[in-house]
Length: 419
Image 1 (cartoon, helix red, strand yellow):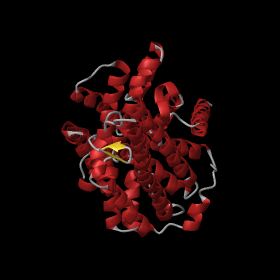
Image 2 (cartoon, one colour):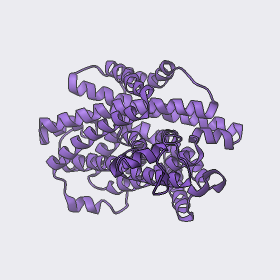
Image 3 (tube, helix red, strand yellow):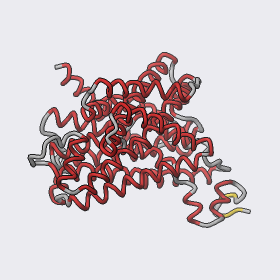
Image 4 (cartoon, helix red, strand yellow):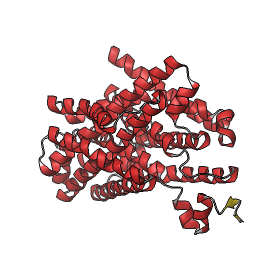
C-alpha cells in the first residue's frame, strides 16, 4: 500500500499513516540537540557583555550569525542524510591522511574549548544559586553529562526529548526577562545596521560568531541524521530532507531568539548605567536582581545552569564522534570526560575570571569554524556524494561567502593580536 508515494510499511510511512502531526514530529529532534550548543554559557557571556558594553550596536552580529548557523546546520544535516556518514567519517575517507590528522587535532582542541565554556558557565550558575565553590560546581556539572548521555542507550528519542525540554525552559526564562526589561525596539532595529566601533567590539563580534556557529556541533549534527529514519526510496529521502529543514528552522529559530534576548536584556538593563560588573555573569545576575527583581535573576541563573548541563552533554558526545570519525577509535566515556573536563577545572582552580575565560573560549571556537565549514561546503556540492540532495549553485555560493567572511575575520583578529 502506498500513500503520497511513501510506503506505509516503512518507519516513515507508518508514522505518516498515523496522522499528519505524528508524521511531522518523527522528523524533528536532531536540530534541537544541536541548538542547545547555540545557547551554551559562552553565549550568555558574549551576548550579555556585548549588550552591557555596546548597547544595541551588535544586534546585527547576533542576527547574521544565527542566519549563517541555520544554513550551516541545514547543510550538515543534509550531508549526513545523503551519505549515511558523519562529517569526520567523510573527512577520513576523502582527505589525505596528514590533512585528516590536522583536522582531528584542531577538532579536539575545539571540543576542549567548548567544554571549558560549558563547565565554567554551569559552575558559575551553581555558585549563584547555591553558593557552591566554582571548582566543586565544575566537578558537579562535568559529572552530570553522564546522566544525560545515559539516555542515548535507550534510543535517540529520549535523548532528543530531554535536550528539547531543557532548551524550552531556557527559552521561557529569557522570554520572561525580555518582557520585564522592555528593550527599546527602535534602538534595537537600528542595531541591525552592520558596524563595529573598535577592536574590542570586533573581538566580541568574533566571540558571538564562535558561540553561535559552533564547529563541534557541525560534527554532531552530521552524525545525528544518518539512518535515524530508514528511507525506502528517493521520495522518502526528500520528505526527510524537508523535515530536516523544518527541524533546523524551528530549533535554530528558538536558539536565535534566546541569543537576541540575552543581548537585548543586557542592553536595556545595563548599557549607559553606573551598575558595576555587568560585563560578567555574576555582575549580570546581580544587576538583574537590582533592576528587574529577584525573579529575573533567578531565571537567568536557572537558564545558565540548564544550559551548562545540556550543552556539556552534547559537547561530550561531540568528542566521541570526532575521535571515532577521524581515527576510527573509541575511548571509554569516563576517560574522554576527564580529558575534556581537566582544562575547565584548571581554569577554575587557578582563579581566572570566569566570564573572561568564557569569551576567550568562544574566540577559540571561531578559529575552528573554517575547518568544519570548508569540508561541509566542499562535500555538499558534490553530486557523487550527495545524489539528488546536492547543493544548488546559489546555496554553495552563499556558503562560500560565509566561510570567506569567517576566515577573513579570524585573519584580522590574528593580525591585531600579533600587532
